[in-house]
Amino acid sequence: MKKTALLLIDLQKESGTSNVVGMIDIVQNAKTLVHTCRQQGIPVIYTRHISRGDAIGLANNEPLNKQGEPIYYHSDMDSIEIIDEIKPHKNDIIIDKYRYSGFYESSLDLMLKSLDIKHLIIGGVLTDCCVLATVLDAYYRDYQVNLVKDICGTTTLGAHMSATLMMANWIYDLKVYDTDQIEKMLSGEKHHVWETHSPDQLQFSPDNLKEIYSKLDNFE
Image (tube, rainbow, N blue to C red):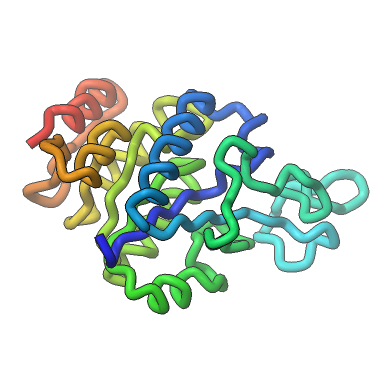
């Protein structure tokens, strides 16, 4: 527990007004887990995706308005702030990032190493974008990831499912939870968790995506 941190990806006001499927439930689940982690003394870390208003440092072909300013996560807008229901407390950590991964050109790795963190509990948006990129980068850096899939979401259910399955297939020490189950784990209660036994275990196609995704609820 002393080597575990909660990492919430881009749960910002702009994300809350976008077309993320199930965003209301995502925020409520995040609120529940944040409260539990604070009670357990687990560090709470937020990432904020930011696009500079002057367009410096933007990724290739980042959408711009007629004034040449970024359309999404504009640094001069209060929409870049964390959603009020899960607003950071004084001792929480906020990591500002300018690309999809929370690790890219940010202080996230430095903060985690300073806290001697080895295990990450991760949720946030978008599953197929910033969550996927951050989880992969965490794995490359030898952090063990616990993905809370009902605190993740994106603009379509299919994209959310496929991104989750890609992570489950290729991140060999990944554990996949729902909020109620990781709450039980953190409280030392009997709980359910999905873990892989072999690479590419959950092979899926457009036709069987929902069926294969449901296997994540067939806990070991």
